[in-house]
Image (cartoon, rainbow, N blue to C red; front, side, top):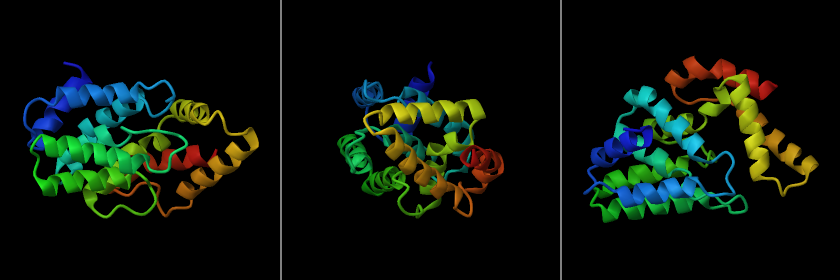
Length: 200
């Protein structure tokens, strides 16, 4: 069983969804394969789910965090400002159709929206979802360099000088935080590497 098969079955069953949800899974996998993506791809989803298999024990409701990771970049349009909102709406629709309880749907929706990184996440599981999404900041120097190249590809239409100005501001914003990561588990394992990568 592949990572994607194993993760989907565990998360879908864990949130109390009816059936196997394979049509939803396959639509999501197709979305992550869209040609305009360079970073927000199956590679990123796979890295998130792989990390979840270790870090997920930290969650209050692991299945909700895992399914939120599946949906967090379901919609990715580099010129849109509502990707997370549309991704959250997709999750909400799919889970409601599968008979998931409304409180669980709302928590998954909130976890997806937390990956906007606009304001601090409100709950522990939201913070964990965000930390998994941002773990690439604390990856190896080689993976971080690849990540930056991938982001540049996604924004290839932006002039070089403007891209670097905006990108520097975003990365500096993470560096200026008291800690890049919000949960102790991630701070211990990734904070130092993230600060080295961001400083470079």
